[in-house]
Image 1 (cartoon, one colour):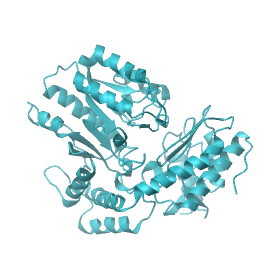
Image 2 (spheres, rainbow, N blue to C red):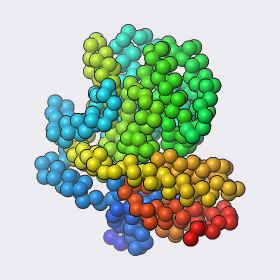
Image 3 (tube, rainbow, N blue to C red):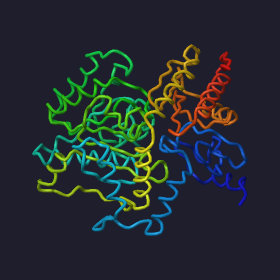
Image 4 (cartoon, rainbow, N blue to C red):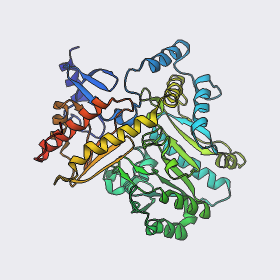
Length: 436
């Protein structure tokens, strides 16, 4: 089947993320991917600035991950996890225990990040019942402008002002929302930043099972970086009021913020952490909710010791084998130096846009670079400009952002930054001449 026919079938019959059907925006057929390059069906090559939604840490078509997948296929691609286990799941679990803070040592595997959030919320609720809290303690606190996924309860703790899930608001469980932390990551700590959380827990702790937030970096809700002290104070308050603290590290885990996990910026250990995206290096869908042994022990000693969740593809052997190899590759690589270099180059390169009329703020942390615009980005026209410039960057909301693979070369990153700025400058009519 030729690519034109494929593209037309796609346009008419396949839903893409957050898109119409038939699709009103261009969709670009990818023929192959290698390293940090996507090759389109028409032969054009694009430097990838998205890591396939932040997951492809090692780039594409990596021979070591390919070998891990092929070797596992020789044994089994899948087997149910109910009543059975297998070496890939156990090896991956040990690999996670080796890099997570020691108290986080009870692992539940899911097949997507959103479902990991659902499981984390179930853990918090079952924990509250296990320690004798009443059923009325069933709501959650979350931070505005946060994002935790598209499944039902995950949507309920996403920032309502983003509008992504506003269509379903009437049917979602009602949660408590806190203002976005006022103290930015690179600024001074402002003690009043924690006051809304302190006030909420003082008044409503008897209703709240858990506090869920994205540590340090709010991802799809706005790419905002906030002060580590907020996490330290949140930990103290949750301890005081018996609220389970959940860190959603699906976007930030495995080095993206410059630390293996964003929680390390604050030196804080949550009660539950969710992981995904980069877990398999972008090869297969796999996620996990990992809890403190205190949480698991309380559930185990309760009248209802079973954690009531069980995905069909839980701990899929193929995904676990690739994930274990991806974590080994990450730990054996100089990833800290690579991320530091990416941060430095993006900070230097993106600084040119700081004075543009269309740009509200430029910010960089780890392998995350953000141009926050004053208004929603015209994706329908900017996206083709970016592709014409030879880069794959997918704006959303009022953000043009970069999250390249950690293995991107200095030349590729320089090209990515330069061409992204060139496309934005053209789109908004900004005067800009790239440095020689």
